[in-house]
Image 1 (tube, rainbow, N blue to C red):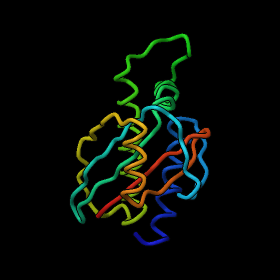
Image 2: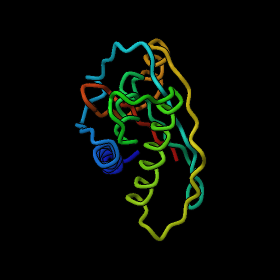
Image 3: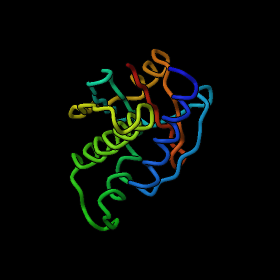
Length: 151
């Protein structure tokens, strides 16, 4: 992906975290990505239309609880089912994907966004994916978030 598009995607992602979940992000070089979390949620979604492709995000599981509570506007003493954590990541990904496509191609181009899917990863799987693909990385609340887009 072109350098300017990578920067746009990072900015879109940081903006969505800030506006949707009240969490602030900053740029993170891929060489600086480290995480000792035991588990992660990986969400990916396809899009089609003017171009077809996929967008993927990987979030440490421990961050998904706060993400879900912030998106839903819940207090810490309220309960949420664990499936709500995955739903929060899906909603985040859906929003990032829509804004990314608009930022890349304008608001006149039509895309169909497909339903996001999630999977749980352990640390070994996360490490393997980090080496396998050219992920973009940002840091949210001292946690690395990985993004990958393909067209």
